[in-house]
Length: 410
Image (cartoon, rainbow, N blue to C red; front, top):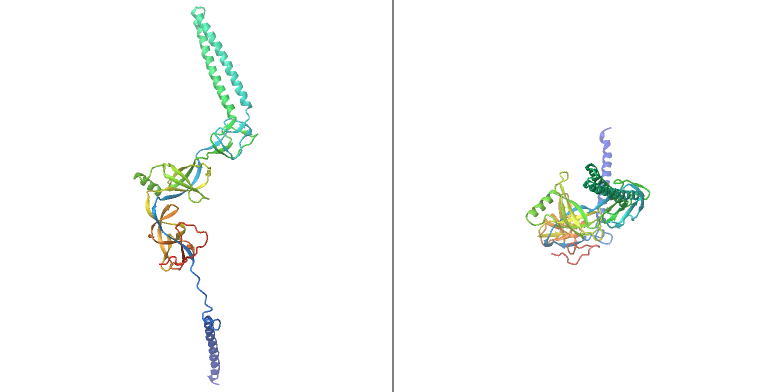
């Protein structure tokens, strides 16, 4: 039997493969036909409509002369702070004040059992009376001895002894007076009074407990008005301010400072710089400064975090934008401005310090540029179409902006 018997098998394989290829081609034609929308509501009915451009707010760059402010972070501290300790030892008899209340200088806060100190005061009073009586007797005896010596009825030795007794009794009087003064002080120290005006803390010891002189902490008091705000600046800031002071552009102290708390918008508390440390910390490369801030309503409390701004130099012309418009790409800062055909155009910028609630732009923008401020997170790439609405720079937008007809048309 020869090999020609295999030929029919090959023919059948070719037939199967051809059928499969035809089916694949028909499937592809059917998919293309369905995608074209034929056979439904008409051509293009299956295609999805393109989404509308996102709504954004655009604001023109602000041009004006400003005084720049440097930003720092700091902490509020009391001008005066006292850890109240007793001057005498004894058992606490009464706690007179309410914890956390404001007290005036001289107000009674604690009473230590005064009985033993009153007894010592009475004893010292009696001892002084005895010493004074002895001194009076010694003076009388000395006067008689002097008269007898003049009449040659007494010896010089007896007269000198009487005179020395007077000196001794006078010294005893002075010692008794000092002891009485000390007893009076100790008796007065049994009433522990506020050494400064301010707010008292909690009572760290209660009635019936033993308080040791100069050791037991009774409470703390901090002054309330004015307050200190301590903050630190780096070497570059220090050197720049030093150069400005040399040129007469600013004073060495008394420069304006603005302070804002964590829950406050802006910087509502005004003060002045009143202290600059005499050395830069080599470990951190910073120098410590202090502002004195009035606190008539007692809003500032020791320990609060504070945002601090200090006037940074002379007045200059500047371009300003809102910080909300600034985006970050690794080590670069950039903004989107409104370009031709209402498209978003990226511009890299170099920023300066803050001024009047806005940010100074040193490089990257020009006068007349309209910057996307609100809704910038909706812009995914440069050249993306947007629906702009014109607002003023620094305007707070609480709802999504509405596109104005023809807004931003070029």
